[in-house]
Length: 546
Image (tube, rainbow, N blue to C red; front, side):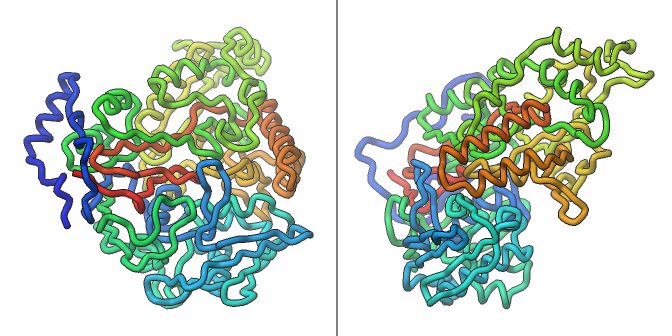
């Protein structure tokens, strides 16, 4: 059945656009009748911001797609508790070195092969062997091997205790694929249309436009926190890529899309008033922060890093551009929704221009050029801040960075903002110490264990390309490692807080704002929700009404 909500005339788009320009309300304000009934089937047209390289893989945008197609071992519920998905139960050994998962019987991949312990073990080896870069960095240093005990029992053996392994596996990077497909199909085929046991399968990818997912009619394995069992209610999802935020909103108002991702902050209250369902998820893990290059350039001096932090009045900046939708975040380690969060670390720096000037004087940046920027030995205090435009940093985030540039100018910093297109950014542009002074970006995570990925030491034998500060501290790494292996939550979080304070005390990174996953949904589409590990949309339970 085609989606009857898409057949509204093109004039609706023109009308909606005109009313938007006039600052008036329009769109879905009428909404469905109180006695509206569920419609069988239909196609959800979803407007997403970014197009990833593959349906599965290491970027959160891929994880959002993976969740529709690939089941995982476990899921995270709204109370941040790990609940069953492909695994019905699990337990940790007394020595904390083995996690054993017991699988649902009778589940099959869409190629007809069984979701058994051997397939699960193969997926773990595949990830750590390089098949999924993000899954690998989560497991490396901990993973030893995977063993199929019997058809429905798989044991994951570790090198050292990893208390948050089940929570980690709830992220979309850990979707389970058919062992047969991974062994027999090309990397390109598995990239474009991975074979899982999920609620939908990839029907067609029109690069640059959309991915069409069609319902798995034989679906039997929803997570325990889903709203129903059996196949999805809708026939298909048309997952369109609509980079421009204004166009996404216009398409929703025109009923050309039924749901959109990444709602511009300025549109939030208006869409809410027009009757759209709005969802906001503050992603756990590293927030959108500024990480200083400690290996080369002016920020090798801790006084200069602290001066930059004291030059910023971050909270009103974020509040102004974020219209109360985007939360301010002072913590450079983890976001406020992350277990183990330290408010003390977040509060370490507030705006203090006098202190910033004193620190710059102490660092030798005592002169000024013709434009008022600080100088030292004839060199202007210019710092380079490249950012992934339209990928890692959205339009609202770019405006906040421009605010940063303007604020620090008063104490003499000249910030060179460089928007980097997605293709260049993911090809490694501006990743070397010689190419940048500040890194801007986030890392989603279910817990503070992300600190090890971001702050684990980088050595010639074990380079850590995710250490954006290029900063090695055995003390910091040891705190994080101890936390990751500590079973008691209070003791674990105390160690994580210690690590966050270390990062703040040395001004290695400062927070700016929390990364959001937001949705706006037509009132004619019900039961769209956000999964609780990373905030991606879940369309399995969704249905239309009329």
